[in-house]
Length: 242
Ligand SMILES: [Cu+2]
Image: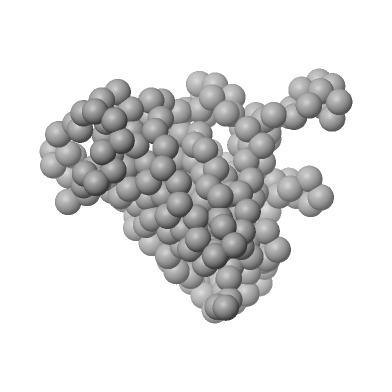
């Protein structure tokens, strides 16, 4: 069996060294890592060199995507938007997005990963820079922080953000396949001037479902902002399909 990515076990990936990042690359989190390693958001990462802007920029050819598919689940229809989700080294998976009548249908495929659940979100900025600063806090550096927060993070708590998505299950084969629809996202979300990014996280999303016996005062801000899905493992700019 070929080597697999082990996102949960290798928060400091050796590939960072290959990219010439030098010292420690603390992979920026949408959330702190799991409960056993509650690392506060915003570790430093080596800012020097090796920055690889995978697909900067937002989608611009919106005029090609005016056609709105109707009906349900026409997964053979061509996608209206696509995203290639890349970790700091290579492609991990893809997302195809179709405009339905009143919703968006996503088909997400990943491969080469350890089995288990992984959080998925649509983040608000279509910029997947593996060594970048958070737009609202330039002192916070890490992988794919350039993509900003979940779409809708300003308007509600997780998991009620427009960009909150079901997690993907990676099977024993290392592959995961997920198709779902959401009526929370619109074409405007995906095509606004700063674009949007598909984000695959390093661990499962808890959907802020924290029993009161663990958190008598309710979940904290990190949880209600992010779902504690771990660091940002792979990112893909959402682009209009051409
Ligand atoms: Cu996220």
